Image (tube, rainbow, N blue to C red; front, side, top):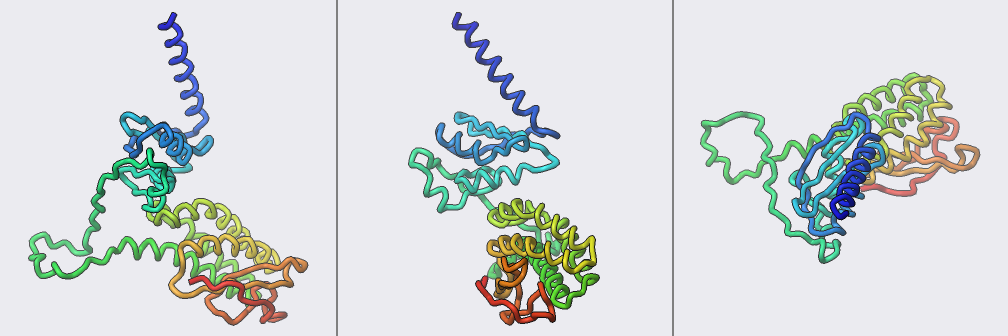
Length: 290
């Protein structure tokens, strides 16, 4: 009787697992180590990694191995592991922030294994060169600069779009938005740092939608309508990713039938992109982002 009951339970478990994975299109399955201790860890790890119909995580407490099943056309291993790291759990690819790990329940604070950062290749190959001459010089990590420049290009194109709307030039605004869209499509989000990556995932589709609308028309009114929501998402992103100089978050109380609208500028002096020369100085700075 016990054996029969056990077989039934195993069959049900397999069926449920298969059914869950069947809902994920383009399913790809990978296994990777995620560090943790207990059943509470399992719940947190799986909850952090799971996205309905997109990604499913099954973490084994004994082996500390996580089986990731995901829609490869929508997400990837790095995205899932970054979410898990943000919940406090290290993997062999990403470390959890110290403050998040420190806030885990006592029984969940696993032994952290020291990770050696991946070495970045030098721009010049000098295998036979005497490196002792360079021992006192710290290497510049080009990856950090490149990752910052990725989002800087997005912000720069946003500012060009804003400037075109200030002059009420629908043609120039459409071209600037095309450049913005191209830049967004070229972002390699797996190379963003963890915090920026998580925000990028939330706003990228919204930014694309507004950029496409603005690029597809020369009607300045329609462009400005989409610029309002685009500005909200760029604001969310720039608060996390920052910019090389202070950025001013500005507000026009008149636009949208008195509901108002915001935009971002590199200048504290107000130049209104919603009304242009009609009411160029209408508005005020409500926040400085440094």
